Image (tube, rainbow, N blue to C red):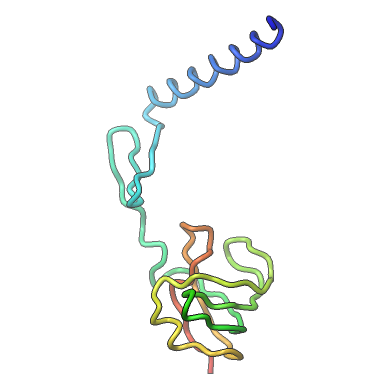
Length: 126
């Protein structure tokens, strides 16, 4: 029992010491539900990541599911590191789905804040 207790206490002590040191140095941060980052004594809103300057990727629409609010896309490697694949994505705005139909080639942007799992912008390639 003593052999297990000692390493646990060391890890616990180091955890508190590291957190305290980071906080003392003003390096602690906490992300609020609205995306605001509290760092030290300041609060910062994140930059508009899903805006017009988000990198666009190319893909092909495989399926549109308005009931679920998703579009299935076949795409190459994405800027966020996601490898080429075919998968269903949520859409930020259901109106995006009205522009799409199976077989279309598109350019699209995803929201990096949710790991690239939501399509935020679409351009149909003609």
